[in-house]
Image (cartoon, rainbow, N blue to C red):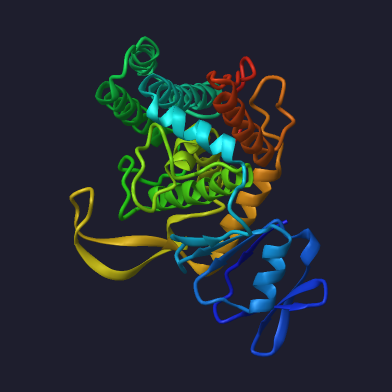
Length: 351
């Protein structure tokens, strides 16, 4: 079980083999400790030391989020002891050829999955979207595939161009009437961007936890250069899951009108100039009751069979993430590249 605590002012305690959530002296939830794999705490939720130690003892991952869903930090039970694996990871980072191959692989998987997502929506006869700029997108993808040497600037340029084409078309997959101005964040000033950013944060945290559980250093990335405090390797592996997992879920929630613009609110001080150049921009957040709606659907989606990959279509998304972390581990130890996942032929999006 992946537990999310969002009730502000609540207290998380331990009673025998149970975790107990209380507010104002009343019990609002009682969970078997043995069933909890991870815990995410949002805002002013107050865990006891006993509860935290019990979760750490069983190896559960504990994440702290702001009230609005910004990732603040984690508690982990121990640091990975697999020294040979970490040394292999560092050796690959110092080898410019291998490092570039890993970085290029991340971009290829991201762009290929973006192509498959847009193709799937274009095949749906009930969706008016048609992928008219597919040729431009494929040409950009082939430029990455043919890229040789260690040309990081070109790789980033093609990645950015692919993202521009993708999100321009992604906007037309939104059939509920919401305006999507393109990918914008820090701050996210519209509902679609706010939900995309939140979904990427949750998924990235899951990948970071998996990397640490396998003994890897999530800070040493190849596409995302190591920066102080950034889980660069987790961001690398996240690229493969952005479009087929988070983006599809966001489209489903808005297009089915499970979430709407009125479910978001602006909080915090007004910023003078946002990263995207907008004056007086506020960060947008899900309202508390709708945050719980999103988390419920996110967990259901994560536990559902992915349905898109050939041979492993019955595998839930969380298992796919573990599978890919294992694949990265194999690539590091064997000195090879990660194997690619193929989509099921003629997959079309029904959501």
